[in-house]
Length: 36
Image 1 (cartoon, one colour):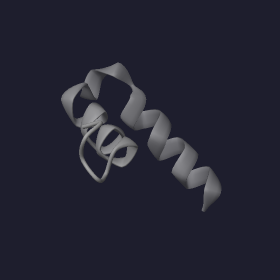
Image 2: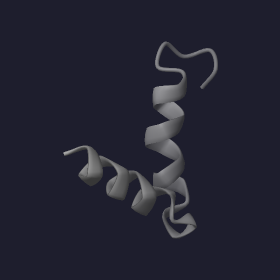
Image 3: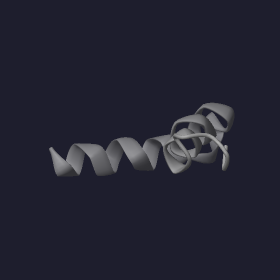
């Protein structure tokens, strides 16, 4: 992903999908709701 134009954005969107049980996706959802 480091060579792709997305860079960090690609990691953020892919990692939670690859590891749904890690809890990262839940943390991202909670933080997004807090910002709303």
